[in-house]
Length: 274
Image (cartoon, rainbow, N blue to C red):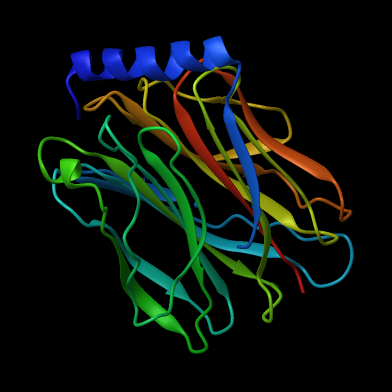
């Protein structure tokens, strides 16, 4: 949480300067969430949400879980995550950050697994990241820990969202494809990529450092979880395409019709089927 004056100053820098130079940061890289319970510190959510492709092996979203982290101290955590051998565990992270510099996750740990960073979007205050791991043996009720690097999140309120999705029917040799990032201070929040395999599925995570305002997502997309963090006037969310994209080479954009003209970091990932 940062004082309102800090956010006003940062907003002036990040809104007015792009208008003057006509620039917004947008990049694309190649790489790689029920019942709900809520509490004073962490809110979690689990569900079954499945989608099957029309051809080939089914790419299935087996389960989702979410933790709204309400703590001044690191690390952010989520618990009770389970997966079978050779399923893909994808961790979506959105976090507050200091106004004077970027935030990032310094490393992911949990379940004795090896975790890989797929993509990070932190060109503006706050952070949006996606990590993944594919266990070779079943894991049950593990906890995942995500420490933040910026020292400013060790004092005051520095909230964040952890979302975990488990997939089946993925390509074991290369589970993720292209990724995209966007850091923008004006316009409609969006992040784009062009698919690189038939029947792949696109998911994303975002951080709105400007205000705690709920998303209105575009048609054909699904809101996984929207964490409206009023304590520090942020919004963190996970959204995805409602179905896999049939053909490789298709431009895909995750976007929000509202709110607009906010300071956002937005990251997306393409999940590969078998």
